[in-house]
Image (spheres, helix red, strand yellow):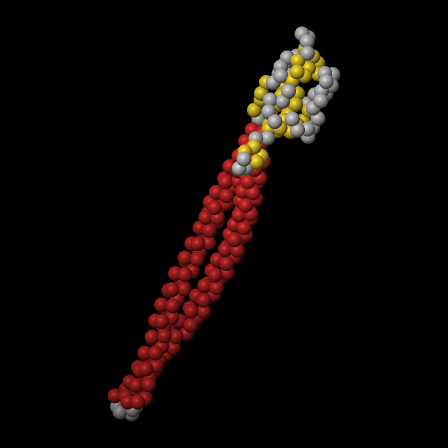
Length: 231
């Protein structure tokens, strides 16, 4: 709010003084009434100044409207970001649960294949004498060897698959840990912009307001100003 000393309409001890608006605007508040005694510098009337341009019209009003529109957009962005952050948090949590479940299944499958491979190796060792004596044919021997090899290959494949899932789980958990900090940083940035807009709105509103003050001590006489009046 900036203040301006103006000529006005009051009766000081040394005669009549006319107090008038320093610029065009709208009276927002009459701070005195007919017959009131006022001191020098006392606020009498508050006026909102109307500054216009050919391109924008009522400049202050246009600025205020644009700032309000900007603030509404930022508030919408803030709500949307919070909703997206919550959705991402749930999604990451569900992904971590799914990967943890996959690990448990892979562990069970790998343990089963390891057991099958061990059993196949024991069986192969137990029938080796039969093969050496010629009791067991080459075809049957090859089948038992293939069973051992297949079980070993599947065990290794499951181990590699488990390693990949475990890496994904670690990355997901790291993202879960980091996401609140990332979200907080983005929310704080939006809030900072909101604060800047609010300050700009306050400055714009303050610059519109003019307080007309009594130039001298005296008594209010012939008050014609009313709230909402254009001057």
